Amino acid sequence: MKGWHWDGFFEYLTNGYLIEGALVTLGLTVFSIFFGLILGFVIAVMRMSNYKLLSAPAYFYTWIMRGTPLLVQLIIIYTGLPQLGIKFTVVESTLIGLTLNEAAYLSEIVRAGIAAVSRGQVNAARAIGMTPFQVMRYVVAPQAFRIIIPPLGNSVNGVLKTTSIASIISVEELLRRTQVLIQERFLVLELFVVAAIYYLIMTTAWEFIQRRIERRFGRAYDPQAGLVEQR
Image (cartoon, rainbow, N blue to C red):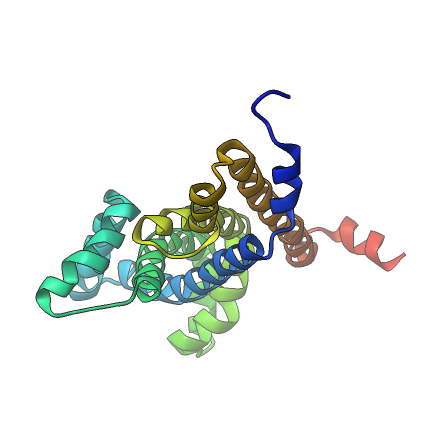
């Protein structure tokens, strides 16, 4: 094929430098989803509060973070904050930016899951003397978790690909390392195809894991599935 170098393609398909970049991408994803979910839960609870001092700041936060591009947020954190004397490394800036951005989206997912739990069950739990914490832990959270699993899984898939934006501030994740190799070998198409294959492998692997998780936590609502599992 004219203009296509199979030798270069296969050489970089198993390149250690790119594999390390893929691991960095996975690390950024795990970190931002884990801490984004924790922060998102707090924001969701604040949004649902009857006190304006809690709900208003939470609404303002989600409005800002969802209404502005992640790239702009990263640039502000990495290049803007140093003007105020607040300095972060490229990795720290990326982790903070991804976490804060993802928390805004995850908070809406969590809020929708909590709101989907029957109000009657919450009132019944309170009627038997449960504290608000106990109601959340034993009644609301288990049911809400099952509801948010599918959209949460989609968020993981999205963050895997969104981490490529971090290459703009020189974080050596998969896309950045691909660009570095392109500057050395000028195998533009071949290396970008290799990078695409790496992303496809990671997202496909997560899709498989997500389906297993959904089946695992969905069995309680599907008696027929339970019968099949026992046979």
